[in-house]
Amino acid sequence: MQEAPLVEHLEELRTRIIRATLAWFVGMGVAWVYRVQLLALLKRPLDVATQTRGIPAQLYQQTITEGFIVSLKIAAFGGLLLALPFIVYQVWAFIAPGLYQHERRMAVPFILGAGFSFAVGAVFAYYVLLPFAVPFLLGFLGDQVVPLLTIDKYMSQILMYLTVVGLMFELPVLSYLLTKLGMLDWRFLAKNRRIAIVAIVTLAAIITPTADPFNLSLLSIPLLLLYEISIWVSRLASRRPERAEADAGGE
Image (cartoon, rainbow, N blue to C red; front, top):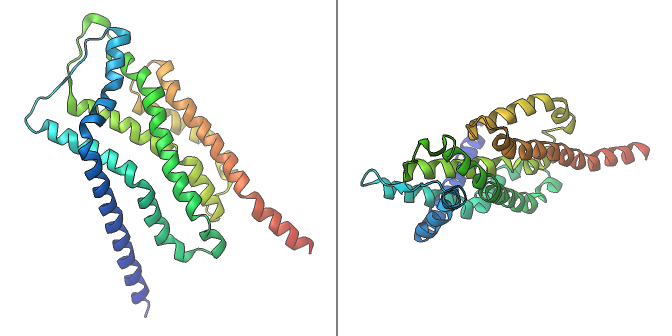
């Protein structure tokens, strides 16, 4: 008797995953058409290093298939950006049946907020972090070394920056959602602030492998601010239930 609901949930999960994957593939198809333009955009931090620091850096292709593989990576990232709202909707649609009616009303803000936050994070990494990080890292040894960059490794690192920072910018949205669902409390976030600081600085050090405190702070400070914003958002989201309970108690 209990196996039927479990099978139904697994079937629905599979359906949602298939739909999200198909949406991603469709987005990849669109991004593939503009892969050359996207490549030019992603190459811009390297051009900035060449223009502002005089670093003679160019991208090289070492193997026959490298250009194709890089095109797939660019298309995959672009497809993720395009399909993210639909993917988030599939996640929401899967968990929505187990929510109360007032909780289901958060669907539109959550979907739009998740897509917007990821985009803002990627834009921040592209316009703020990378223009400083790329020239510094390439010129770390001065004119003693001439950068010889393969297009695959360069694009992999750039896309990793954009993806990780974009995901980190989802913290306030997740904080709001989990608080509304009763799965998170702002006091927990505030109590574990020190642990979060160590984790964020460690993550920033991994993403920006340099001993320079300036480049490290370019990523760690915004992430720390995002954590504080998440605490504030969680506290704000928990106020209404607390007031409702207080009013009920007063009656």
